[in-house]
Each structure stands twice: as C-alpha cells, then as structure tokens.
Length: 285
Image 1 (cartoon, rainbow, N blue to C red):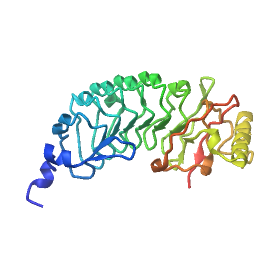
Image 2 (tube, rainbow, N blue to C red):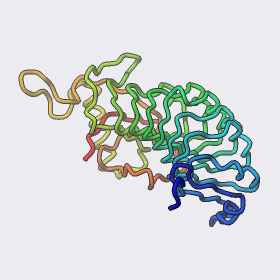
Image 3 (cartoon, helix red, strand yellow):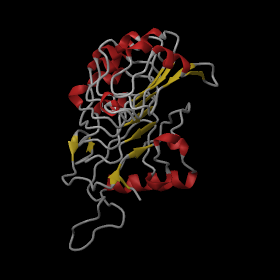
C-alpha cells in the first residue's frame, strides 16, 4: 500500500462505480462498494441516477453528504459498519426506500433527524449497534415498517410509538440496558437488565404450537406476578416476579426459539390475530 493511502482512503471514480453496478435477480441495479476502505462518501455516484440499490457497508465513512436525498432512485441503502455519527435531514427525500441499514455506526439519538418519519415505504430498518437511547417520534408514521433492529444500543425504555405500527412483525431489542417495562403507563422494574439479557420479538405465527403455548403461559404468570419458579430465598423473588408487561400487536417474545441473527431476517405477510400477545425479557445463551 502506498504511503499515506490508508489515511486518505480509497478514492472511487465514476469509472470504478460504473463497473461495480450489477443486476440483482429481481432486475434491480445494485452498486456494491462494500469493504473498500472508503472514508469520504463518493459523490460521483450521484451521476448514476438509475441505481436502485447502494451498498457502502464495511467502510470508514464518517459523514454522509447533505444532499444524500438527491439519490431519489434508491430503494435499498446499506451503510452498516461505518463511522457515521449523524444522518442528514435530506434522507427524508428518499421516499422510495424500502430497506435501510445503519447498524454498527456511531449514531446518537441527536444525530437522527425527524425526517426519518417521511420514509413511509420502509419495510426494514436496522439501527442496531449504535449509541441510541431514543428515536424520533415522527417514526410513528412508518406504517409499512415490518422489521426494526435496535439491538446493542442504550435504550432504557422501549419507544412508545412501536405499539401503533400495525405492520411491525419483528423487533430486535437484544443487548439494551432496559431498566423497566411499562404496563398501563407504570414502570415496575427498578433493576437494570443483565447485559446478557435482551428482548427479541417475532410474530406469533413464526412459532410452533408448543412454543407458542409456552410463551403465552409464561405471559400469564407474569401478569399474575408469579414469575417462573415462584419466590426464592427469603422472599427475594424470581427474576420475573412483579414484572408488568406491555403488549404489541402481532409480536411475541419466544425466548430461545427464535433466530436472533439479522442476516436471516425474513419479510413475511402475516395476519394479526385478536389474541393477547406476550412481551417479556429473555435470557440469551
């Protein structure tokens, strides 16, 4: 590697970008510039107005251009594993986006613009592995959102607006310092969750009959305040005792029966039933 190249990063020219465009099996044009040591966002790619999908993951990009919203043809944008601390407001102009991956960056809640709520076509949004403790309330407008990754962040409470997103089928809250889960507006847990604990929600239709029954039975015990295994050692109580829960339409916490990996997330059309849905913490292996 020539001296100084690492500090400047890889420079992407329009010629390089054009050669990196490939057709996906479903007929979309994808520009893949992943894992190339890019530090500065290559503005030359704005000239590729027919690109539908852009992969700039696994680079060292520290800032997105303020006019990122001009890339209006994008339907799929992957920026995971960079060094982003904020997202420009103009991202709200990418109204055709269905998939947005911003995981494993350095994003703070202050760096997320309210304009994220304008991305009403989003089906999958991954914000895991950042430094977030809250989300813009405007995101309650994301009616098409089916999958939301918030794992490995700083959330103490779940975003309140999640319960109004009627198409949401998966929420990954694993590895957050959740201090309490609210029920009827009242927080009942005072102790912070173990760092190895997390919350992973999937639609109940993803579980077999036996696992679904087990989860619902556990939920009933939680509602009664009994926990699993009752009290222990002089009334100290089980880890689940006295916990109040909040329900989310179509979502359930399956303990260890669901696959946590983001790589295997699937988008499925599901029908929400009228049955009560369980939400709780679970211990990861």
